[in-house]
Image (cartoon, rainbow, N blue to C red; front, side, top):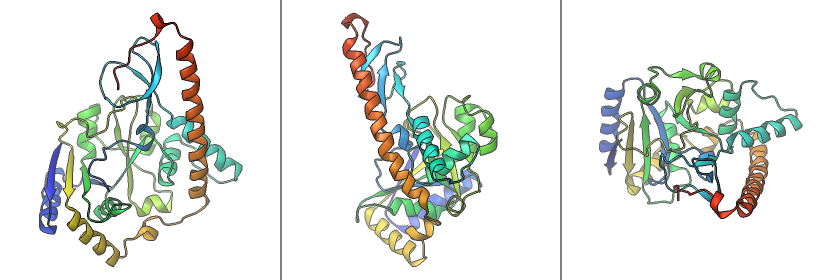
Length: 287
């Protein structure tokens, strides 16, 4: 992954133009308000190792070291989504019938999922680079060539649609890039596309050799200027998060439920580990 550092508008725009020439029409953007944040979905940012490669129980610990030693982690995103859909049902709110579309909707209403948001609109990426940023600090814009990424990581020279991905949702080891459904005003406004993580839990940018991703680290003073410019253009929180409704509130309720259930799961795994004889306990390689 190539990284650029820019301090002036001209430098930033030059990188954008060069990348567009290189990637062609396949440019997706994502903004991070902190340059140290990696390309990792919300549901994968705090994962617990629960077994070693031989299925022996471990004392649950948060993954800090990404490796290929075979440690097994607990992936909670399906539990999170189930709780979200259950709460929608209670409120008699319509939701998509397809799993991938459900994930997309949940992601856009603040639920932690296995998805990362991307946009074909650079201004959307810049907005999220500004959002919740501390004034004067650096931020980052990532640019993804989704077709090249799919080809490099999954040997699939195409960008999937959500409908196509639904048919093969469990068949990909590595993350996959796909276009989001255009059934929700918020997703339409944000030109929402996604990458979906699967069994491989590493951040997209963990390996530097990935040529399908560009990172631009933007100086804090330039970010302050960009933020003012976006406001002048009417690109604000209200314009980005259109159609705020009850699903935003439900997402917050579900977040508390998910947190409680995850804590209960970890407590049960710790009890299991404590009861396991020393010679039958696993060895962890992920801390």
